[in-house]
Structures are given as structure tokens and as C-alpha cells.
Image 1 (cartoon, rainbow, N blue to C red):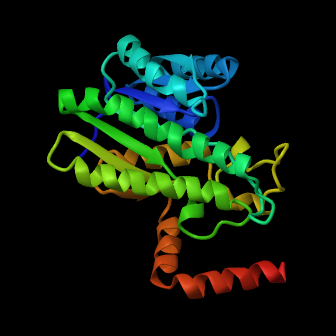
Image 2 (image 1 turned 180 degrees about the horizontal axis):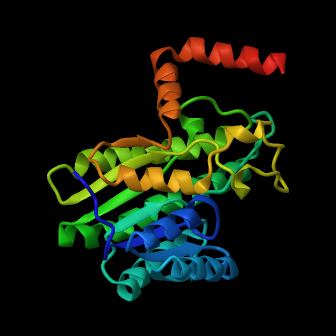
Length: 263
């Protein structure tokens, strides 16, 4: 099948920078109307300007998905102000780089709220509207940390792994309806996400050519909307890595630990 973005209303969380911002511009260029939601209103204004420069249009709202009580009211507002939402892209996330040896319960709770619970609640708030129309698509953006290893990102990977299985459950339970649910996994991308942040351990060092361009990731996600497969990856090599881990998780982890020790 193919997916035509023209006239589609697409709500993107985490769209003030990085993959979310690039996705908004690519979708707008292809003819979609985009709804932008993130914590930083000033950045959302800039992204909306880029959307309009690309020949599209949209709207924006400030939203902190960790503020769980605000999620359902936001969903109702977005549906009312944007119009019926054809596609929800749960892209929002925040890195938590902390060795499991030093992770606190408070950090764990915060990480789960930002990277899983908020997105799950937004999905559940919009799902009845989509089911009533018998039309809609939900794309949950995961992490390669759930597919390979979680070096200093165990809590973050655990939150995204919860999102993976939540999406899988949606995929099964929505079978036979006009609503679809998909999982999309980007790899390391050249965004703020991969830079040092206060309160986090240092990111794992990688060469510059290891990072994908956000626009390329966005294009891969849009291509994913053109098929009914449950799972999609931003690049074929990521799928190969995931398959290697699934084929022999014990051996894979031993190899990765040995690699870390050598570094």
C-alpha cells in the first residue's frame, strides 16, 4: 500500500527539535497539516516557521508529557483545534544516561513518565476518537537501546521497551479496525539527544559518521507509513543488529561487554 500525506492531519510530539522537527518539515513539504507539541514554545514557533517555509502549515501547543494529568485534556484540545487527527507520532522522549549502579527511584519514575507513560496516555486519549471514525494511525518512536544494548541508558531503554510492547498490544487489538499502530526505531541521530546534559552521565563516544541526519530518519518514518508492517527501522543495518541480538541474546551481550571492557 502507499500513504498519501496530502491533507492529512499529523500530530507530532517532541517536535521542537531533532527528528520531530525534521519530520514536521518533511510532512509539510509533502502536503500534510502538522500539529506540533513539545515543552519549548519558542522553539515550536521556529519549527512552524520552517514548516511554512516548506510550503505547509500547522499549529503548535506546549506540552510536557511528564505532567500526566495534562495529557488527556491536551488530547481533547488538539482534536478540537486541529481537527480529526489522522496520524499521531509519539516522538517525545528525554535521555536518561545513568549507570544502573547509581540510578535513583526518582530518576526511574521521571524517565518512565517522559518516555512511556505520557505517550501511552496520549494514545489512549486519542484512540476512542480514531475508533469512532474507524480511521487513524499511531506511530510510536522507540530506541535502538531496546534492540541492542543499554550502555548507561538502562532506565531509558526500559521505558522505551514498555512502549514497544504497548505498541505491539495495540497492533494486535486494533486488527480488523481502520486504526493501525506501528513501531519505528531510529538509530543514533545528530540531535540534542546525543549531546551531554546536566544530571546525565556522559554519552557513549561515537564517531561523527555514526549519526544519521534527522531529515533522513524523518523520510524513513514517512516511508514506514506506506506499509502495514508492525515494525520499521530508520536503516537496514539497524534491523540487522536487532535480528542478531534476538538470535543469540546471551552471546550478543557477552560480546558487547567485552567490547566495553576493551574501551
